[in-house]
Image (cartoon, rainbow, N blue to C red; front, side, top):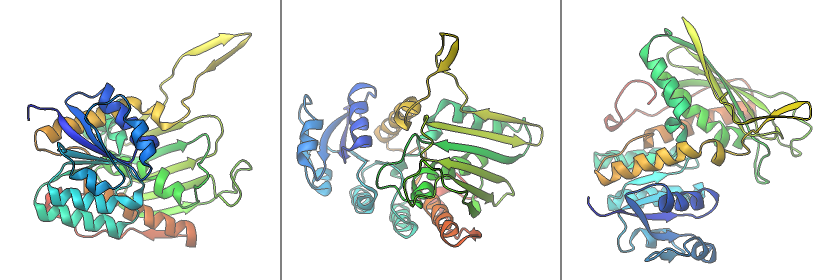
Length: 342
């Protein structure tokens, strides 16, 4: 392809608007040619200053707009399945913000639709795979220099949760990133989930079980613990430590500017994921555009999106009923390779 990749952006909320900006300012080789959002006034405002962009209230109409070569799905998760199946039917490459779909049954339908095509079209927006620190940790673990990974210790903290956030969303929305990161870093599927609930923080909204401790056991015998705390109040923090047979490695401690003044020292802490993972998002979209222009797909696959949904559902069941819950995965289609995690 010699012309810029024509992209339809579905959904221009917080994440969609950020990707819309990214496609215009930091990622070359692509241009937005269509935008869809039920709130057409918001969509019109999002494309002010851009030339030759059509605005639609209906996502499928945007897919059929002139010049569309690929689709970026940033709409609410309930709308993902329809858009993904429609994109597959049209042979359009997709970058879909996580989650792939709201549940594993819908995700499996997307996997099966893509598998019938015999080629990958979908990249799922688990951006941590494109973060420089996570990529370095992956390279180190794959090298075998530290021996076999035994444990992953993970921290996922947010300043505050949105008003609509529920206790199950700590797992299905927040911890979904650790699910994918653990599968990718270890190269193993997650076999079971156990959720432990401490007494909620006094700063958590009424009824919200926050924080939680989520334990994964993998098919290869590793154990992963995730502290998820979405109303910590002080900043956005993501850390991961791999403990291996011959050493350990930790990421997420990178320091920004440290200020000394009036007998005290302080440093800035990122306030949200858009700030902490800005570079990762740039790399993610850049990789997607480059691959789509060449007729390829890279990064997290539809199978990875399905596996994350299945693990999250097991986690929600453990949160609800207590105890250890086994993850039940479908047979992995040959399109996505064999073995354990991606």
